Picture: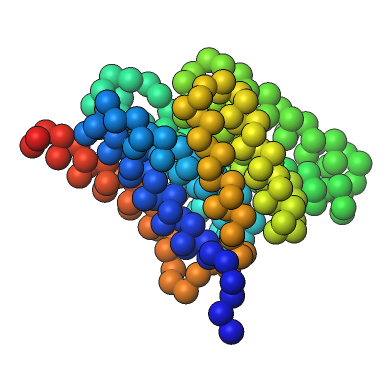
Length: 227
């Protein structure tokens, strides 16, 4: 029996296509705003699936290590190529994953731990939260503190509809924190996400985004040089 709604794979493809539209506008058509507005859909969708990845991964260290390593590599390349020091989306999500893992530990300790372990887990989480906030005030991180917090907010809840509601709340906080008409188009991701049926999809696309992100940027930069 076919499940109604959209699988995770379909939503990731939507996120990838809208991200490509965003970068196409940024690199090839900087005067055409429509590309960039469509591209606002990408980040919130990817953020939601970072939370889903933390929920279902069987190897937490590998998941974090992959995202963080890619973030550091892309950051180094970006700095060398442009001279700009903006920390990319993979760094944003690395902070998100660390906070989610610490939050998962807090939840576990609250159920099973001693009072000492409960206090320690709380200190670790709020200490990392404070460090994250300071980092985003001192350095330019893609989508800032509330971009980091969007997956964390989603991860607070277990039920699918609860996670969708948390996604709505987190997206609103993100838009309000940025204060621009341009970024308000992030909210277009909300009705799309509400069609998510909670399934992964038929095909394995675990590393799709990891490959797609650098590949499409290289192609766009080559096109820009040729044109």
